[in-house]
Image 1 (tube, one colour):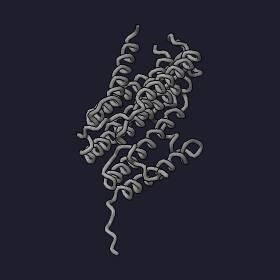
Image 2 (cartoon, one colour):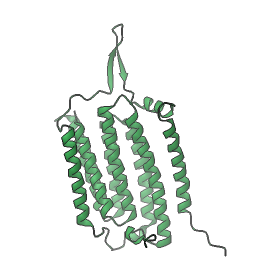
Image 3 (cartoon, chains in turn orange, cyan):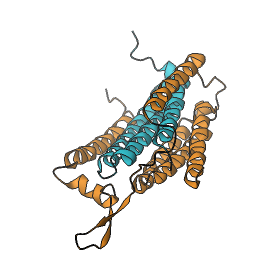
Image 4 (cartoon, helix red, strand yellow):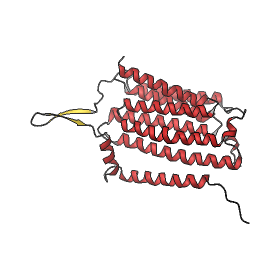
Length: 188
Length: 102
C-alpha cells in the first residue's frame, strides 16, 4: 500500500464518518459542524485528484459560505433545536433499506466496470514532450487553472454557461432576499 | 496509485449517506444539509472521471464548478425559504409544512 492510498483512505474515512454524524446526530448544530469536516475531507479528495482549484473553491464556497449560511439558519430557527420531539420520521427502516440498496447497486456497477486494483495507466498532470530539436519540455495538462479560466471565457467553450451561472446567482440572490423579507403589514 | 473505482465507491457511499438523511430527517435544515452531501458526492465523481479519463480537457472541472455554483444558489434560496416558513408557521419540520396538501 502506497502513501497515496493511505492518505486517500484517511480522507475517505474522515469524509464518510463525519457525513454519518451529519445524518444521525440529533443536535443540528453539531451536525452542521460535522458537515464542515465532511466538506474538508472532500476538498482533500480533490487535492489527491490534482484538482487544487476545485479544492480551494470547495473551501471558500462550501466551508466558508454554505456552512455559515446553514449555521445562521439553525440559529434563527433555534427554538426547534431544543424541542424534545423526535428528529427522525417514521421511515427509519425504509430509509436504511433504500440507502443500502442504492449503495449495493452502485457498488456492483462500479466493481463490474472499473477494476478494484490499481490502474497503472493514470495520465500524469505534467507530461514531458520532446521538441523536434530534441529538448524535453514539460507541458502542463489543459485541465490546469489557466486552461480552466480560458475555457470559461472563450466563445467556443463555456462562456454562455458561465454567464448563465452569473445570472443564476444574481437571481438566487434577489430571490433569497425577496423570500426572506418580512411580510409588510397590510394597510387596509 | 489509487484506482478510479475507489473514488467511485467513496462517492457512492457519501451519496447513500446523504440519501438516508434526506429520507429520515424531519428538520428542513437537516434535509438541506443532506442535499449538500449528495451534491458533494456527485462532484467527487465528476472530478474522478475527469482526472482518469480526460485530464487534458477542462470539461470535468468546468462541470464541477457549475455544480458548485448551483449548490450555492440552492442553499441561499433554500435557507431563505426555511426562514420565511419558520416566520409564518413557527415550524421547520418538513411533515408539518402541508400548505399545498388537498
